[in-house]
Amino acid sequence: MSKIALVQLRASVHKEENLKVATGYIKEAKSKSADLVAFPEFLMAYSPAGQSAEELSRIAESIDGDFTSALRHAAKANNLSVVATIYEKSYLTNRVYDTALLIDGDGNLAAVYRKLHLYDALGLKESDKLIAGNDLMKPVKTNIGNIGMMICYDIRFPEMSRILALMGADTLVLPSGWVQGDMKVEHWQTMLKARAIENGCYVVAPDQVGNIYIGHSMVVDPFGRTIMDLEEREVLETVDLDANLVKSVREKLPLLKNRRDDIYSKYLAN
Image (cartoon, rainbow, N blue to C red; front, side):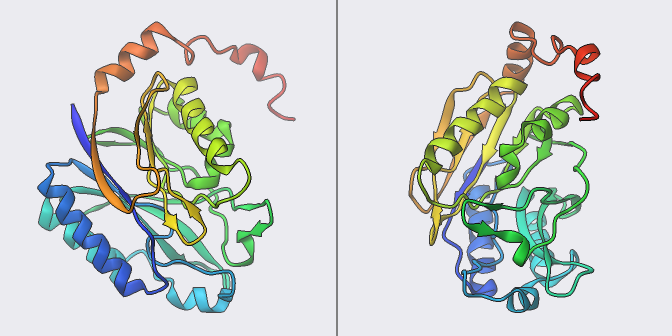
């Protein structure tokens, strides 16, 4: 059994304020005996619609920048794994990566994932400010299980979660800034549960609240039960994950084993 802490927060436009809030939550997670604390997408700063791509680029940092260094120091000081997000400088002028970081309890940067699917949908266009990554993050063994990383809009693409599960992930962590709108809460809740059920894994989804975001940070177990929903509160809460449950569900409902790759492969090129 392991314990994770989910943080649901409203990020400000000020990077220094958000970093101070984040390090405070890391200490709180440690005080509640969590093994890992997970933050939402856009932890570094909220980017309002009127903010230009150039202005956002000035906020962005490299992987070894001050924001990440401070999070690594806090993780080490509290002997606690951290999932956090940053705007990472890219090779393109006025475009940044939406990047998730996995930091271990020794303060090491264990993994980096750059968001593959940019949210150019339903009236928004992230590609005006962001650039997409070009690779999956191989699942990483941690003290809460084998973590596969996704970010927000990625959840709408079931191929990605399935591939991560086949690569060994038993816990999908999905930092998000899920935008408000018609049926958006229903889409969010339905897809988190679907990804958990079809892959027999935990889905851990910390989300932004306030500004333009819905909140409802969730944890769903491998059988599709919602074991946490933070609704619209700005809060840190903990929940226990049971690795044996993943094994049990996958044995009783062997969806990964029952796939028909011999048939699917005929159509994958299309």
